[in-house]
Every structure is written in structure tokens, then in C-alpha cells.
Length: 189
Ligand SMILES: Cc1cc2nc3c(=O)[nH]c(=O)nc-3n(C[C@H](O)[C@H](O)[C@H](O)COP(=O)(O)O)c2cc1C
Image (cartoon, rainbow, N blue to C red; front, side):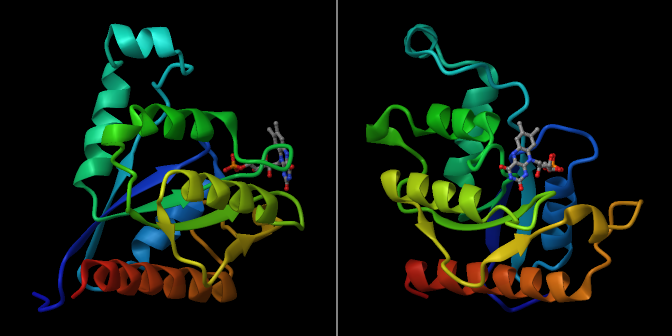
């Protein structure tokens, strides 16, 4: 039992592939969640390409589920790869779906933390900046520090998917604590 206030976090991974380093990083974040924080994963793999006509005809089931999960969550955690200097289309597409219509966007005012893993040395810095820009557009309130940038990811994870780089683990732990503190601060606790 913990007497700390409880916070429910929805984690969304921007990679759909089985061996995703970002999913590994997300799992490392889940493992380092502070007392009082519980995390569940939101799925984006079944979300179709955004089409306003489709939305007007009736929200696809996968979108409705994700929207409800975002609404119910106290905070969000994004794990984003970097594709051609930006966030992957599948992640942006999912965010676009959930954001509509703007009058009932569940993103409004939502505390957010992000991290990212990439093959390159730039370590998702560009995709995270792009994601931060999207947070601005949707009035999501992103934790600024620490920035968790996991470059040359293949060397940071063991074959079983566990994080083997302790310095990275420490930053991830600090990020999760910062998300917890930020969420309570915005709640006025
Ligand atoms: C279409 C595409 C574009 C990519 N562009 C970048 C890039 O701009 N910067 C980078 O560091 N890595 C880039 N990569 C390599 C990714 O960092 C690498 O595939 C990484 O493993 C993706 O994340 P995941 O392991 O979670 O799937 C790209 C990969 C793909 C498939």
C-alpha cells in the first residue's frame, strides 16, 4: 500500500514493429514508475489513415477506444522513434484522430512526458521537438526535463529487451518522477 496520490498514465508507442527499441524504452519506463503511478498501454496499430469523411460517418472502433483511454488517463507517456527527422506517421496519425473534434479533444490540458530511441546519434531529438510542437497545438502540457534521448539504441538494450544502460535507466526514472510531480502540480495537489 502507498499513501501517495494515485496517477493513471496511458503510454503510447510510436513504433509498431515487434522488436521496437521504443517499446523496450517504454517498458523500461513502466518498470521505473514511481509509487502511486500505474501505466497501461494504448494501441495505435489498428487506427486507419485519417479521413474526415470516415470520422463524420462514425469514429472507427480503434479510435474510440484510444480516445476513451486518453480521456481517462491523468497523464500520457509517448515513446517516439525518429523517421526522417520527424515522428512516425503512425503516431501523428493517431494523435490527429484523437484530437478531433477540437471541442472535445481529450488531449486538452493533459500532462505529457516523452522519450525516444533511435539508431542514430541524434537520438530522436528532432522527432521529440516535433512532438512537442504538436503538444503545443493541442494544449498538452509536456514535461520539459529531463529529455530522454536514447541514441544508438541497439547497444543500450539486451537481447531480451531489457535496458542494460544504467545511465539511461536513471534518466528514465527521473522522467517518470517528473511526470508524477508535474501531474500533481497541475492537479493543484
Ligand atoms: C522510415 C525511417 C526513417 C528513419 N529516419 C531516421 C532518422 O531520421 N533519424 C534516426 O535517428 N533514425 C531514423 N531511422 C532509424 C530508426 O531510428 C530505427 O529504425 C529505430 O529502430 C526505430 O525505432 P523502433 O526500434 O522503436 O522501431 C529511420 C527508420 C525508418 C524506418
